[in-house]
Length: 117
Image (cartoon, rainbow, N blue to C red; front, side, top):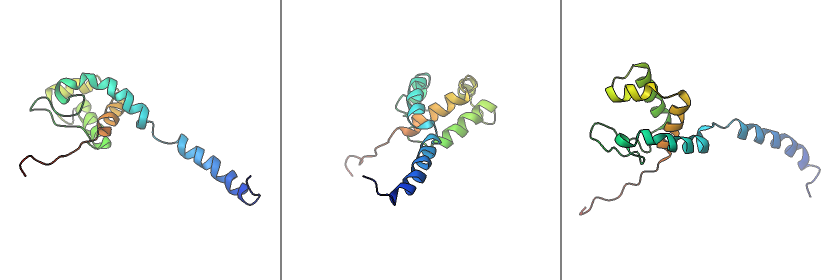
């Protein structure tokens, strides 16, 4: 049973907690799942795991989400030039960019020891 003293605190804390949860960025789970589906178009160069499949493509797994968004927007606007990425980015909506960034940022990179060292 909740004491009478605790009730005012609960009445204030409960709506505040609800407000905080409801204002959380969408990027978390929804963006990651949507981004995984959308990442199939990135697989040839960056891989679904975010590890580059070709020398010209950077590894993007575990990269900062805001950095990825900034880079994709720069390719889309033409501020950054890359024949392939400029074409790809033009087809992406803002939502696509956010989802892809959330997905690739969520990939955890584990660094192991180099054999023989």
